[in-house]
Image (tube, rainbow, N blue to C red; front, side, top):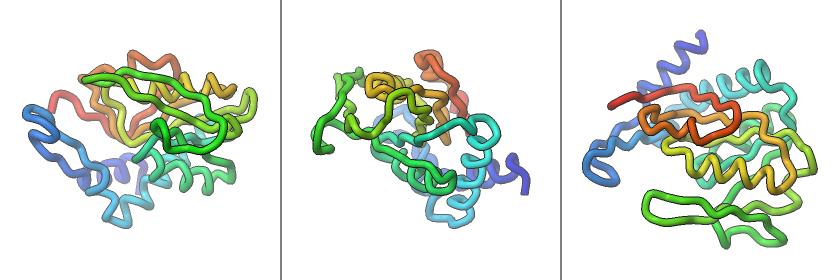
Length: 181
């Protein structure tokens, strides 16, 4: 099966929920797709193939809370490299670096353990969704603050109309794009 066919298969399994979490929003649900074993297999294959082909220099995979955790350890294990989490404030022990970021209705804080990234380590950040770009931008800042070098961000789904990519000062790759729907 080609990469394009795998992506179409994955997209066909993603749940769409109109008016969630509020009227006018169509919620794209990766969890619906992950109940299908082929989707899990295909996601792993396309992400790993992309990283090997385009970013073989990556030394660490960073996953964002919480759905990024579905991918970072699996991808890191397949590549034979380490992984680290970016968590919301108060979820990690030890010495931490933190970044505050803006949400639609306020602010939040991401944290990472200072021992998670070595100085100048080449990092790829992964998450399930790119919408407005706020959380991914905060994760980029956090990795840089911790001493790492972000070589790319990978997301499974991108809501193109929200222009989140424009906020990000790094290479961003999405596998499935939703425009105007």
